[in-house]
Image (cartoon, rainbow, N blue to C red; front, side, top):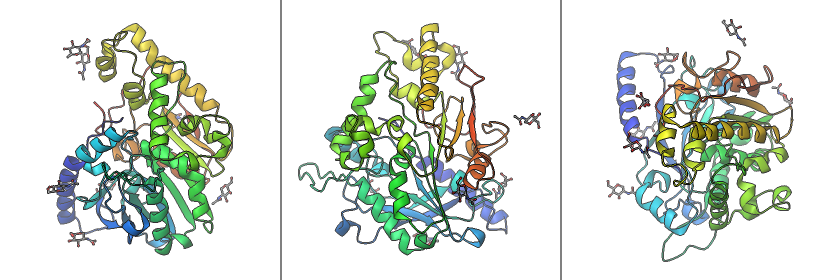
Length: 403
Ligand SMILES: *[C@@H]1O[C@H](CO)[C@@H](O)[C@H](O)[C@H]1NC(C)=O
Ligand SMILES: *[C@@H]1O[C@H](CO)[C@@H](O)[C@H](O)[C@H]1NC(C)=O
Ligand SMILES: *[C@@H]1O[C@H](CO)[C@@H](O)[C@H](O)[C@H]1NC(C)=O
Ligand SMILES: *[C@@H]1O[C@H](CO)[C@@H](O)[C@H](O)[C@H]1NC(C)=O
Ligand SMILES: *[C@@H]1O[C@H](CO)[C@@H](O)[C@H](O)[C@H]1NC(C)=O
Ligand SMILES: *[C@@H]1O[C@H](CO)[C@@H](O)[C@H](O)[C@H]1NC(C)=O
Ligand SMILES: *[C@@H]1O[C@H](CO)[C@@H](O)[C@H](O)[C@H]1NC(C)=O
């Protein structure tokens, strides 16, 4: 699930752009983005903290400085899941960026990871860490046994805890401000790992989690509900995740259902910010698949909303209403932050055009960067939901992942 177009092409252009900027500018700290080398986790293989293909876990680390020297951001990227033997084999074969660290050298740090003070004013000088997503389980799996026939390793949870453990020794243990964040499958990982992460950094004054486009809904009333449940159940079973899911959920329902944030969020104690579109393009295009027999033009419709038939458009609006209803069900904890817009978009935090630019989505005149900063630093409560619009907004900002 989740057809991500790898970012390598974009990386080449960014490298070129950064060279040009580096040559034309004498100020080093104002670059729009920076390339950060990979660090392979030490003793990763001994610890069993390895990617699907058995290669060592890795992360990219940019050191903090100035008043950010004791603040840490941990970023978990997205990239869908694999929940069956064959789909994990395919992932190793066709998506090496999401299943291995073998050929990874650098990562582009932009948007919420950007070192540019003007465009990322609250976090530009923090210690910033991008953990590579190479397990296919939202950093949750842990199966000790390796099937000799496939050589698939299911160790997402060990990757997460082992990398955090190594970062603790690099200064995270003395951090005063900490944020766990991520987008898509990484936004879900942020929700799933939020309280567990809080327990790993007991000395920090403030630990908060920001999930971008990770609020995947079950939407029992809408087409393909069984498909959505099956996808998550497979991931949970294949990667041995049940034991890590909160008892408060698994005592009430099947473990597969405890991968849906709606069944977990009410029990999360750590402050959590949910950033999402209520017309989430990935959820509408990929998860909300009406049976092709009923809806022959669904793919065309979700690619170009103006071509949707009235019944198709109704399904999309129903998704929106169900999304907002589901969100209401997660309770009213005052430490929660919300930024729910109506752009027909999935993922906001890793493209500057969406995160913080003149054209980026705003609610109450706040960009996403301002909203997250205001919420993180308690400058104001942020609970913003766009309820005016009942049609997916065409927010043409940045280049998208989905076609
Ligand atoms: C830093 O961000 C500001 C505001 O977005 C932009 O005007 C400036 O060009 C950026 N700096 C570089 C070197 O890209
Ligand atoms: C990143 O890696 C490249 C290639 O190995 C190396 O030339 C460069 O010095 C490294 N940069 C840093 C900051 O370590
Ligand atoms: C790494 O790159 C080499 C050379 O381009 C290629 O042969 C190999 O298949 C790649 N491995 C992975 C896991 O991407
Ligand atoms: C979808 O769009 C393509 C290209 O525009 C067209 O050829 C095809 O017939 C459309 N499919 C349906 C089911 O409308
Ligand atoms: C979407 O469909 C409309 C109506 O068929 C067409 O005019 C428009 O060019 C299409 N847009 C894109 C981006 O393909
Ligand atoms: C947003 O800014 C505009 C122009 O500065 C102002 O007119 C409007 O009242 C503001 N809206 C909100 C919700 O603050
Ligand atoms: C922000 O508010 C929370 C609870 O509302 C509190 O625990 C925390 O200490 C506050 N942080 C700052 C920096 O004021």
